[in-house]
Length: 337
Figure 1 (cartoon, one colour):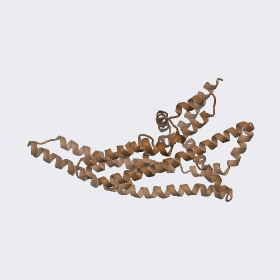
Figure 2 (tube, rainbow, N blue to C red; figure 1 turned 90 degrees about the vertical axis):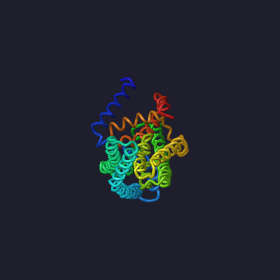
Figure 3 (cartoon, rainbow, N blue to C red; figure 1 turned 135 degrees about the vertical axis):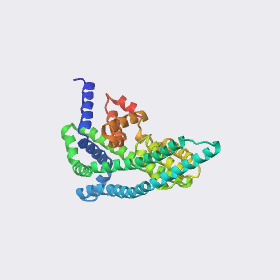
Figure 4 (cartoon, rainbow, N blue to C red; figure 1 turned 120 degrees about the vertical axis):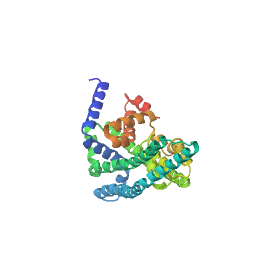
């Protein structure tokens, strides 16, 4: 069978497997990406202590941080959601006052303001759903991925078995080449997640500072929420900016408050996309924006939020392997920025 044909058949089998067995395959993919990312650190821990203890500490530390941050953010999000009914009442008062002013000016009733009142309430309801749906999705994701730490523990625990498998499966040169690929994948994934974490912190600080100075309530929660959505490249910041804009319009002294938030978010997005991200990630995460967006759409259609979240790291791994294949090196260049 010609090589291109076999590759296409393999890709078709993989896609079908992801569609029909996603509950099994996606946690395994997530665990594999996590193991590649943590492998250098776990390996260093295993040199200082027994293997099983090094693996346990290597997994427990990031898990503890994620759980603590997630719980704290759950409390913060709950506070925002509990205030949304009051904000809805404020929105109705704003529309009523505007309607009274117009009616007194032109001397006639304006029925369209009742429609505006209904729409303002719907906007806040949709804003609430953005928060609740996003948090519910991540909560469901966490419960769905409960087996990931178990998978990661056994994969990292049996690292030597994987090395022996490569040595037995391939000739010494090919086995060494495969280990070089895995090492390069680990380096790129670690650089990606380190850089992404720093970018999220910087953007969260900038968002929070801007919302606080503008006078938007819950500035820390809303600013951090917007920053976390950077994990969805290119579109996450726009999704995260919807609710702060709505709340700014409702709670601000003038309607211009919403425009201030839009302007500030546009500035942050410009700085993040053109200065912060290129400076922190640079050539270590060299992905073509178009290929990443297409891969995100494919991942989202197959695996939902998890597929979108895994799009960039999986594409990084694919690019590394393509770059080492003489027949497909041109595809690696095409995926690059």
